[in-house]
Length: 154
Ligand SMILES: [Cu+2]
Image (cartoon, rainbow, N blue to C red; front, side, top):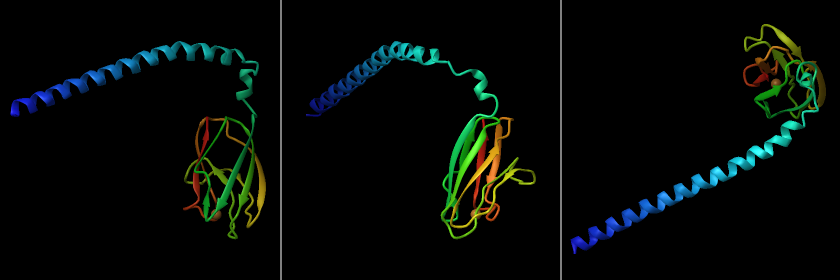
């Protein structure tokens, strides 16, 4: 009785190993077949480089929609290209006053752009993003501890 049981478990054990090996082989073979397909697909994408590389250098226009609601920003990270011309649609849905202000770092000792404070309304801010790629700091000046975020230039 015991011998039959152990044989049964041995058989199922070997069976599981074989099944897992077959799955592994299948996964490997399927991944190798997709590899040439993706490389050929990327070729026409890179050929459409009609937009010059200089477009990323200076003044690329970008629109950011930022919402202040329930004493918080709806985004904690904003990302733009170096030197981008930023148009920010800032919507304050609170009756409390909020703004968007950009600083070199979280000490907020050196401002890059300070937006006008508004209550229960929207405003359009326009400013030029820093040209040096790194992380900057933004906040609401009225709530400098709770309403903060990272402004990424890259
Ligand atoms: Cu605020």
